[in-house]
Image (cartoon, rainbow, N blue to C red; front, side):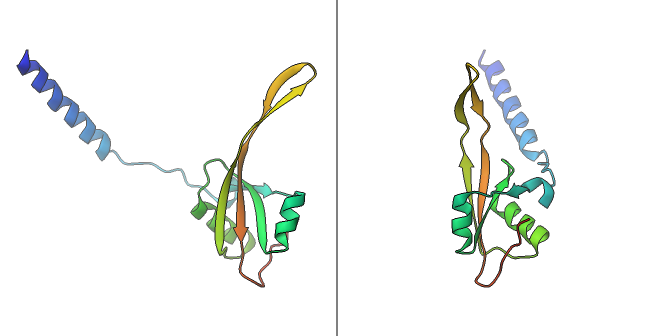
Length: 119
């Protein structure tokens, strides 16, 4: 029995090494898929006075993706990017309970003097 157990462990190690050696495939993201839309709210307009802009972004977005997307779309280099996950909210409508979809938003900080024209 010990012989079979030892053989099994080596097979497991080889399988782990093969999985680790497999190439990792990343999907290419462009500005259109990362940055969904500007987030136009009262709070967003208040922070826009301080040169901070708020955008709805993809759930899979990272800070680097958002920064490159802003640079490609608006020709402005962000100074800092902060991401915030937005939780879905419970709603009650027409006698039924449901959940409103959540998402992710990005706060994009720009250098003094730079602006983004939101349309």
